[in-house]
Length: 549
Image (cartoon, rainbow, N blue to C red; front, side, top):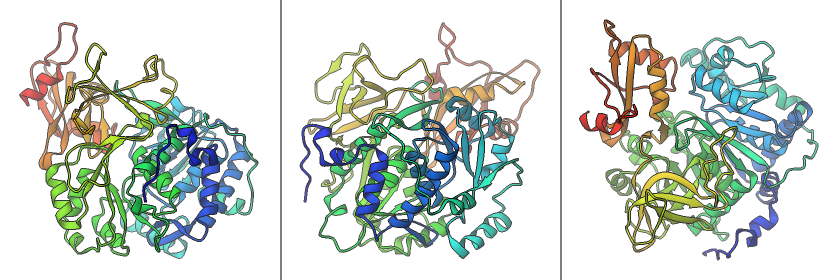
């Protein structure tokens, strides 16, 4: 059963039925009443129960904050996450997703720039929150991994705190617990908030195309558009109404990342699926044990995650008989990984391309393809694509290489609190990615944004790493590039010139960076050199550094 795509987004039944993400949520909960929506550590939450808890959290928000205020959400994949996000949206509050691995410096930038009035943080990162400047924050709320997991949650919290020692000590005056707020407000219905489809739903922070951390302004319209765009592209077997079983998706990617957010918190929700949340995908033993309980239909991941699973004992013994979709995004999937994945699971890795600024889906492989091609597929429904040369001229010849530009209903309105909108006068978003389109219309990414480094699907911008390294008193100047590591993974490398008479070890500078950067941004290689190559205007020639490394 294939869906017929109308000429305009507004002509779809989906857009006629959903005027904002709140109506989308309520309609989905009503339509899929009786099904399970999410699962964590074997504990499920139904669509009905989720709706009740979302109303409770939204009630607390509407009693304490105004529509348009911002809420920072800093946690790994937990059952509390969809409650907090949907509750915020229902209260008209803008969600600011924050990577829980952020350092104090990174968190403070997001909190200050977004002017967040409340932050909800997992207890394992509450010590970072405690150290941060919270001058704009009115309330701090703490969550635990065991929230909503009943008695099992008490055991998980004990193991997390006492055995794995993942919760450093903290003391935040006035902090409140998520579980208590939820229980105190159960049975409450929030005051209805007037929410336009063009209101901001998320400030999703990204390095953008310039390397400066900015919040992409994503509206209710942007996210709704991407939900239906994804719906029109997925394999019809995922939403076949004649099926006798609910579709189950494994979600190891963090929901605070735009890829997993749209796929699992929205697209899977739309089709009445259940997402199995993996809190720590690096713990492969627990990860595999949770997968073993399900004959799952879908999994989302990045190349490094698929490689890790393939290399782990016990993965090949899982039941893949129901697997319909193996979705890859965030970084390029490798031919070798795709071949091994298909040999093991009989599933073709289905590659998608997108950006934070595009909610994120731009293009995706045709579900009918029977082998991995390296292409990022065809443009999503209602999406326009252009390939432009350096002079901004549109290239029309097949396989001509140029910058990939995107226009469509999923493209952000601009960057928050920034003089740079990211869009041209005709609302085209210049991705900075170099691509070509072949004779079949499939898009191939030839090269990434000029300087950006991708580490396990996350963007690392050299400007930020260089700024931190340059803070060290022994460093005169430096240059940061991406280099190839094992299994073709990209690693961060920094070239450093020291002040005359200064000494500094590789271990010392890496330790310095660990205190100021999220782990995936920390350099893995350091090389001390006498001079940084630059242009005649003083710009670091990163290409020369990379060539010589």
